[in-house]
Amino acid sequence: MGRHGTIAGRKAAQDSKRAAMFTKYAKAITVAAKDGGDPDYNAGLRVAIEKAKAIGMPNDNITRAIKKGTGELGGASYEEMTFEGYGPGGVAFMVTCLTDNSNRTTSAVRSLFDKHGGNLGTQGCVAYMFNRRGVLVIERTDDMDEDQVMDDALMAGADDMVTEDDSFTIYCDPSAYTDVHQGMSDAGYEFVDSEVMFVPSMESTPKDTDIPKLRKLVDVLEDNDDVQNVQTNCAVDLYEE
Image 1: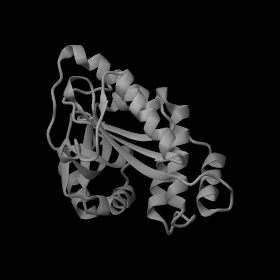
Image 2: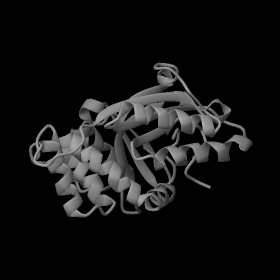
Image 3: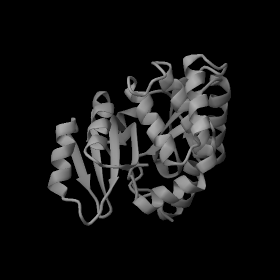
Image 4: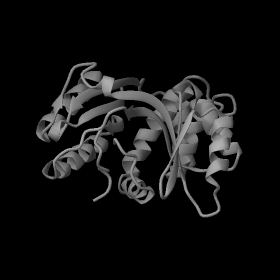
């Protein structure tokens, strides 16, 4: 989404989609494990495992996903696909998928846009409104010092931080994401959310009547097993009712 939303909003969204998230995170682990099955030597895999554990994915599921990635177990080969389009009210969408069948995924994503007042576009139609960034969200507590968090983030390789009432959102170049994640973890911070994602450089403010439709489109896209991430340039938090 354009705004990252409140901690409570993100947690509620995650809880409601926990089973679907197991499938998505298993795919992410499998893809990361192609670069090596030992998280001590594969930073991308380590981050994927930590995120899976944070939502309660069983260790057996994680181990099976790693073995699929390393070839110890048979399984699908996934490719990343990114779809661009517009939702109701002209809000821009970037949808990232991992799929073993590009035709199936393309057809499904196009159908969801069509059925829910959107329009799947061509490559580049909305990408210019976004920057690909590493984004790490930390829940803010009373004992945290903002300046210290900022110093720790910069030392880890981040280049910006935004402070909200309930969170600190750290931004970095995608190439620095695993280093920042590791550095902040080593400093004792835990993440509510962390991802390399498309961050809007310009926002769109829809009409009030379009907001429920936008929330529905985000919801049905995220329910699709192939969809890993949905980002919009909506100025309204689409995870808060």
